[in-house]
Structure formats: structure tokens, C-alpha cells
Length: 355
Ligand code: NAI
Ligand code: MG
Image 1 (cartoon, helix red, strand yellow):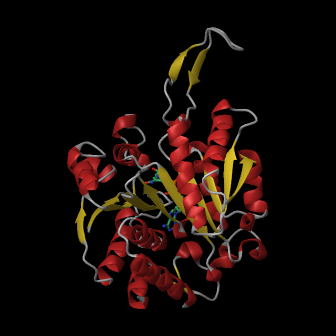
Image 2 (cartoon, rainbow, N blue to C red):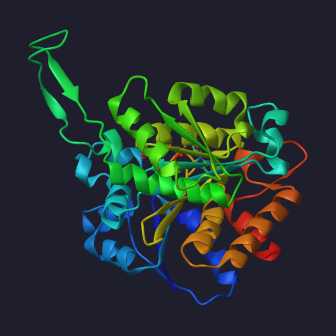
Image 3 (cartoon, rainbow, N blue to C red):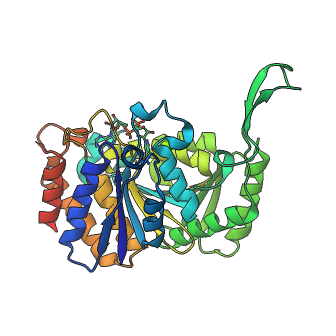
């Protein structure tokens, strides 16, 4: 089993080191190889996703990714910015299915901004389509308007589009995931206004015929945004397009207390996957040794489950994380009175010890 380890920038290097420690402690037969990505790769090779890094990623069974990006790169041309590395990996590896489980751990109920009774026991899964929608649709650009409200004015435009096979494959992923959970899928759209999402709704409804044992509910995205904070536990699996999923998954992350707790997986059709925390490179706390490594450690658990066929090891990691939380250990982002504040490496060491 080969794992490509791509720490990236900012807190990426700090949190990935802890996840690697945990993987090593499992004493399974992994080969781990690291490469530069994002700003770190730009500094060394002049490009955020060098050929050698892409080759390593393609050949690996799974990729453990930290985070990329820093404000100091914002002035670079778009193709050279660190964030292009993650977009390039998604595109080159065909990583179309993004899984973001939002689980509220018992010990962190008080860390959420929502009332404890709304989120205690929360365990929902957001599945975001990752390679289509308005983020990739062509044509796009800027031009001088020839029609509309202001002919002759400067304007910009993007194209929202989805093909039937793109929607079908993500719908299958969602129904199959629901089968292993509480057998309920909420498909989020904007069918009342957008043709792309009326089509989305129609195709998801067609695919559902193959999964009569799973309940399907359709919901408009504006209502879904409201329901997620009103009654989040009413959801089981949520499936949606790239843009709505981007927004709703960040909203859902806050239900759980801290973005530092949220893992993610991005899979392609051969179950090869890229695993990363849901957060970014957190330049504001980088280098201080205070970042929460648990999202990355939990991402490594997802990697074991989805790409490396090691369910038992995945569960061991998840149990170890629960154990350190039960011991009262907290990085600053999840700290509350009466618990013990620890740094990034101490948290990683505690997870290893709990294993
Ligand atoms: P961010 O997620 O990096 O940080 C948002 C806030 O959450 C900050 O206050 C940060 O300190 C805190 N935070 C994030 N992760 C944490 C952790 N593990 N422990 C404790 N606190 C944590 O998002 P932001 O600030 O919008 O973006 C910073 C940079 O990261 C940008 O350059 C952005 O483009 C990039 N980014 C990269 C992503 C990726 O690599 N997949 C995803 C999102 C943003
Ligand atoms: Mg986002």
C-alpha cells in the first residue's frame, strides 16, 4: 500500500506530521513517500503542482494532503497560486466525490455555537460533487455586454452545467453511502429557478429507482441552509452540486464545534482518494504549534477505510481520538474551562498513546 504524503503550506506540515505519526504507530505495511505541493512547491520548483508530485499522487493508492495557501501568494497569477495544486489534483485524478462527515463528539457538544440539544449525537454526511457545476463550466470570462440591463457595460459570466453521467455517478455514491447508514438521502437543488438543478433533480430521481430501500427527499438549497442550523439531526446523507456543497459543508462544519475537527475524503471511480482536513492552511496560527491535528488524523482514518481496505485500523484511530477528548485534552480551538490545553504535537502523541 502506497501513500503519497503532501503536507503543503502553513499548518499543513505541522498537522500532517501528527497524522503520519499515527499511521506509523499502526504498524501496518505502508510505504509513505512525501512531496512538495502548493506554496512549498512554488518556492522550490516555481510551480504549485510539479510533475513529480503529480506522478507520485497518481501512482499512490491514497494521498494524505495537509493544506495549501497563504496570503503572500495572492498576488501571483492564478495558475501559480497554491490553491491550483488542489484543483489540479482533483482534476487529474478525477476525484469527483467529496465526503464530509459532520460528527459532533460527545465531549465537544459545548464547543458548538448551537444549543447542545440540537447537535448532541449529530452524525451527518455531506457528499459534494467536485468536478462539475459552475466552477468548471465553460464558457466563462469577461466581456462588454450586448444585451441585459446595461448593454455596453463591462460584465463577467460563468456557466453552470452538469451532464447526466456526472449526476448519476454522484447519486450512486450517495445512495450507496446511505445504505451503510440510516438509509436517507436529501438531494439539495435549486430546481425552482435553475434548469441545471431541475435536471439534477430528475436524474437523482431516476437513479433512486435502483435504491427502493433508501428514502429520497429533495430540498431547495436555501431551505437546506436553514434546516442545517434549525434541525441538523433530521439529515442523514446530503448530496449536492459543487457550489452548493462548498457552502453547505462549511456551514455544517460549524455544527461540530471547530473546523479543526473535520476530515474529508475525495474519491474517484476506482476508490483512489485524496484525504485532507476540511480547513485551510491557517496562516494566522502557522508555525506556532497550536493547530488542531485531529481533522487530519481523522482524514487518515477515512483513508484507511475507503482506499486501503483497513476498516479495523480506521476504527482504532477514531476510538483513540474519542479517548483523548474524553481525557480532556484540547487544542486552543476546542478549549473550554476545565479541560487541558495542549499543542499540536502533544495532541498527536496522545492519540498515538491511546492507540
Ligand atoms: P482556514 O481554514 O485556513 O482558517 C480559518 C480559521 O480557522 C482561521 O482562524 C484558522 O486559524 C482556523 N483554523 C483552521 N484550521 C485550524 C486547525 N486545524 N486548528 C485550529 N484552528 C484552525 O481558512 P482561511 O483563513 O480562509 O484560508 C487560509 C488559506 O488557506 C488561504 O490561502 C486559502 O486559500 C487556503 N485554503 C486552502 C484549502 C485547502 O488546502 N484545501 C481549503 C481552504 C482554504
Ligand atoms: Mg470551501
